[in-house]
Length: 551
Image 1 (cartoon, rainbow, N blue to C red):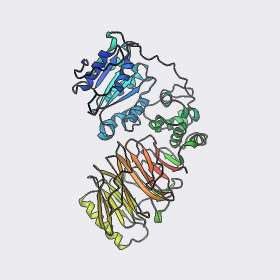
Image 2 (image 1 turned 45 degrees about the vertical axis):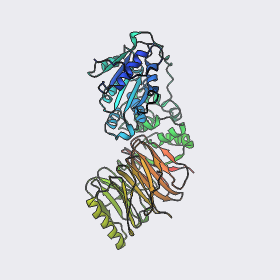
Image 3 (image 1 turned 120 degrees about the horizontal axis):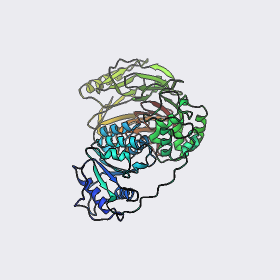
Image 4 (image 1 turned 180 degrees about the vertical axis):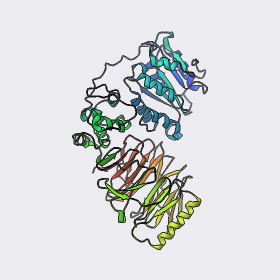
């Protein structure tokens, strides 16, 4: 089993007295491209293991060097479950994970921009609530190419022994000499009442997660690492709170005021939950910037859950007040905006998956399939001949040059492509803008007093453009995560733009000025939309939410 060796490039800046040899060894391991991806820091109590990892997290490059180093992410494991750790790591690395397995998959397949290369520093494996499950997670993460891990534990930890027996592990042993005392372990904190929404929203979320997973509180039941229970809400022993927590856990575990946590928990509550929870959580969420209009989740019956969401649209004209919700099979359901009740299905014969939809003002719905080709579903009203000719021209163009995003307003069809350009096909001709670096992932068009196009890309930017003019030079938003969905609409409050990123964040922007609002439902967001009344729709694999911004 290889050991880490000191780096000759180390500049001599000293960590806490007594751990200098271990610090040199860790820096040598970090700079060795052929070193194992997993490094274990071992030693007896008081040898300075936790202090060493804390120093490594803060240790910067030598003075004068500008080379960017991989992010170092410190995650304490004391009292943690594998699920809580997965949520914490995912949040720090800019991905979304419902389970530990999801975390491994997300880091292995996500684009480099949100995650980059990272070094995970995991302390106190010996004090974890689920050390064996965490050891399995560490082993799987060590196989991910852009992640390296340092795990700290006492010598007598069985889970550490299992990791140490692996074929590709480096070891830094601090028992070779005296070191500083590790921080004194805090006494166990009392568990909150897991059936009391006020207590749950105010408590340490990692403590709540561990208690829900392990069933270590009164009225608890054995936990699961696989997310929400498939059975009834009340069967979780907490009136539905546990099921809601498991559904939205990554969002709930972020640092935030209790009112914001209450809103997220309320939005994740299924219709089988204790009916007393909803008004209580709504009262607790009074200080949050959003009001929940309604939420529909997998397993809901009144009205039934509409299915996994892949695309969303809010219709106007003859379909005013109707939502279009597409799933991964290509089915597009029509829902009433007021309560998400069923209003039928869109009659179309598009084979395969639908990647974008665009309701036109006359009731026609344009669809983009997974090959980037355009399809038209006509409404009940007859279309003017010039709109028919425009749609046919766009369809012929996309048959040769597939699109990646789609929007429509009166007299225009807007398409994004994989090279970063946005094309506005209109009655006065074709206008184009090279707006993004890489694929355009979403476009929206707003028919306001000054019509504009909004586009989002894999480069993480959201940009505004009025066809026929130069694009606005400064992005409306720019984050280190790809845009996965975007929608805009003219509302009584002015134009609003909703954006969802790959790290699970949803934002509502006001291009004409005003504060932006954000929301994280917890699971990965697949689609967003803004209704004509100004409500925000958020679609995931197992939920559809409708939120209204408070005045």
